[in-house]
Length: 83
Image (tube, rainbow, N blue to C red; front, side, top):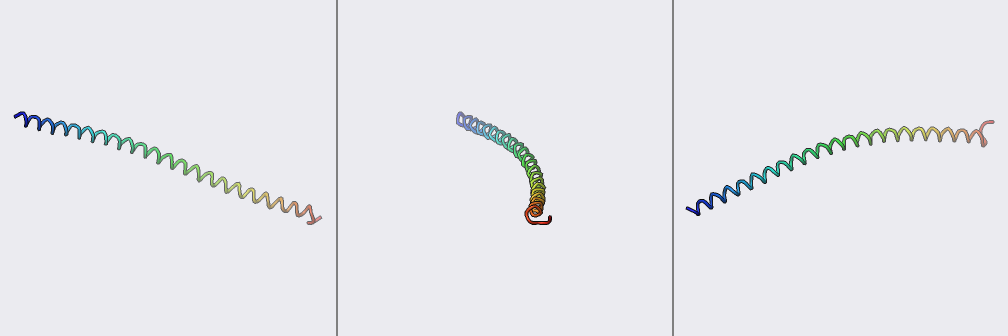
C-alpha cells in the first residue's frame, strides 16, 4: 500500500514540476516574443533613418558637385579663360 502511495505521489510531483516548467517556458517565450517585436520596430525605425540619411547624402553630393563645377568655371575664367 505504501508503495502505491509513494508511486502516486512521485507521479503527482513530477506532473507538478512538469507543469511549472512549461509555465516558465511559456512565460519566457512570451517575453522573447515581446522583445523581438520591440527590436523589429526599432530596426524598422533605424532603416527609415538610414534611408533618409542616404537621401540627404545624395543631395549633398549633388550640391558639392555643382559647387565644384562652378568653381572650375570661375577658375577657368580667371586663369586664361574669357576676359
